[in-house]
Amino acid sequence: MRTLRRPGGKDAVSEMLGTLRVRTTVFCRSDMRAPWGFAVKAHGRAAFHIVLEGACWLEADGAHEAVRLERGDVAVLPRGPEHRLRSEPGTRVEWLDDILARTPPVAGRLNYGGRGARTDLICGVFALEDRQAVPLLAALPAIAVVRRSRESSRWLAPLLSLVRAEVASFEPGAESVAARIADVLLVQVLRHSAQSTNGHVFDSRVAMALRLLREEPAREWTVDSLSRAASSSRSVLAGGFQASTGMPPMRYLTRLRMAIAANELSASDSSLAAIASRVGYSSEMALSKAFSREMGVSPSEYRISARSRLIPLRRVTRPARTVERRSRLAQR
Image (tube, rainbow, N blue to C red):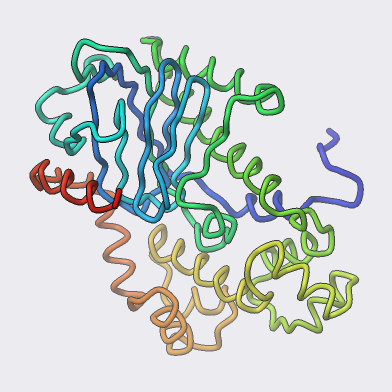
C-alpha cells in the first residue's frame, strides 16, 4: 500500500497533527428559533459550532469582537473559553446547562427559543489528549472560523452533509460515525487555519525535526544534534521552528515530554520512574520538578485530577443574569 505523502516526506502540519488524539466527542443538534441565546461555561476543551441553516452571533472570552456565523460556517474554539451564541447582538442568554436541564434534547435534538427565524446548529466538544504537544492549538485565535467558500467547499460540504445525515439517523452506530466525522472536521479546521496564518508551517526540515522529537522524546537532544539530524543548520532550523510552532526547539521538546507524561499519568498505572525514563528524565525528582513547573501541579495531583475528569461535568447553576452582566461588560 502506498502512503499519501508529498515529495520529501511529511509536512510540519502533519507532524504536529500526528500528535493530536481526540479522546471523546460530545455533540448536540439544536433547532433554535429567534430570539434565542445560550452561554457555555469555560471548560478547557476544544468546542465547535456548525451552522447548517440560518445565522447567529458568537462571542468568546479572549476574542476582540463578536463573529457572525452563517449557513455552512464552522467555528472552533480551541481552548474552550466561556462563550455565547445568540440570534442577534444583545439578545438575552441563559446558561446552556440550565436550558438542557429544563428542556432535555429529544433524539439528540434541542428545541429552544421563540417563534422567529430558525437557526439549525450542531455543537460539540472534543476532549483532546497531548494537546500540549500541538502548539498549533495555542497559536490559533480564540475563535477559528472556516467560512463556506469555493476553496473550503471541497472538503467542508461533504463533511457537513455526513454530519447532518448521521446526527439525524437512528441507525445503530450513528453516534460513533458522527464522532469520527467530527474528529476529521477538527483536523481539517486546524489544517485550514495553519495554511491561512502561517506560511512557514510546511518547512520540510522542521517537519523532520518534529518527527524525530516525537519518535525519540527520551533522547538527549540539543539544537545542534537536532539540526544535524534534520540536515539543517542551527540558525535555519531554529528560525523555521519558531515560525512554524511558535517556540524554540528545546521548548517544544519540553512541552512534548510533558504531554507524553501527562497522557501516561492519566491513561496508565506506570510508575513515575518508568515514565521519567520514557520521556528523557534521569529520575522521578527531575520529572516531578519539570512537570510541576510546566503544568502547575505535581504528577500525583495531575493523575488524580485527570482520572476524576472522566466523570461528567457537574451542571452549572450560576444565574443567567450573571451571564448578561458579563456579556454587557465585554461589549464596552
